[in-house]
Length: 121
Image (cartoon, rainbow, N blue to C red):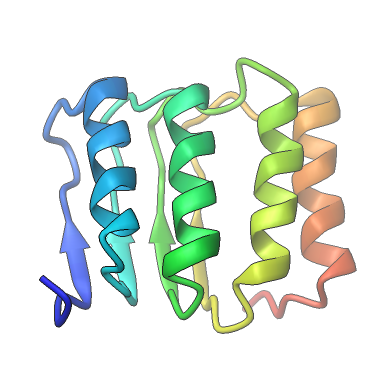
């Protein structure tokens, strides 16, 4: 597994349990470059674990796709994303569409993008 660089599990109904398992996989020091968990309804709590694992073990990730995962029900997830962005210096693609990021959480994500000088385009 150490040589695994891309994991695409979009639209597989993983739910929160699947999000936790992917975080555990990353904790086994799998240094992914691409991760696509779009459309899995992973949720805020599992995403926070996932973000911690990415920050520790997959900082070289360039493509992170988390669309349609019910992210944003808790404002603190926006701050977690902003913190994650500080660690992902090579990130080129971040897909968060079809989530519920809004208010304080959405503002935190935007602030994280601006603060960390992430190029958009």
